Image (cartoon, rainbow, N blue to C red; front, side, top):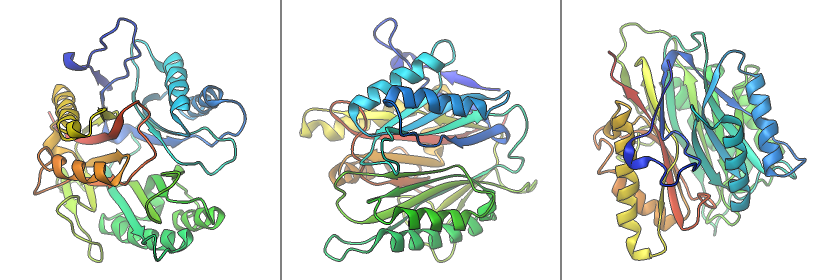
Length: 357
């Protein structure tokens, strides 16, 4: 069963505004993940229509409930949002995240589109494993080739997957964030070799046009094997991976239902108001999760898209007041080109388990 929630404080202020669902709730066992192939012809709106046609062709009787679009610029973001609304808006719109990136690994591509759907059949009988972005970085003064950083990131991802009791063949979504598309064919080959024949839906994006440092960060979701006696939620920090008070390396979730949010944005034209607006974004997220029956303190997967290192540091400070400090979520956070809205300085999307009835 799928539910979408629109708490009153998030309602559109203008009649007829394009109001995507702030949060959708889904059965964990029936969640599927998809990535549309990149297109090179047409404008952003046409590429969006083609991507949606592809995704809907993959669904059989399923339903698209959550979309994440990485776009080339703000004008593309508006066109992509409008195209998605025309196809999927109305009575049961999906949750939506729109992020502006530096580049995409195909000439002429205007967006990379990831999707979540609900299948009519059970596809994840053992639950899901959410894996933090595995970051490998270098300094601008002592750069390291992106393909070498990709190897390091994949080595860490291998430990995280194994530590959660899964294997690369169990991965159901992989997103690779890179600082540069230099050596991209080799980077792609490395990731595909890691995934093996049963390759998960895979997306690559260059995070920023002029990133502050060389970096590769790969996040993933894996399908768990059934374990009837296992806890509903397990926080895992496998040996060989860094332990942090800000995030957990991997979280195994076997609860029956999940609450998935779209992007919650913080915007301001005044640097002095950034902290206030950061709190406001997390308060709105907390209210939306609460309306869906979940809790911001129980978030298990958190993707944060700041537009600068300054914004990232501020989010790192503020989010600790909302997430569980003793059991932080799996997380990805690194600076992106933009959050597809004027004055926006970060966006956050989350997944949280719902209590079993």
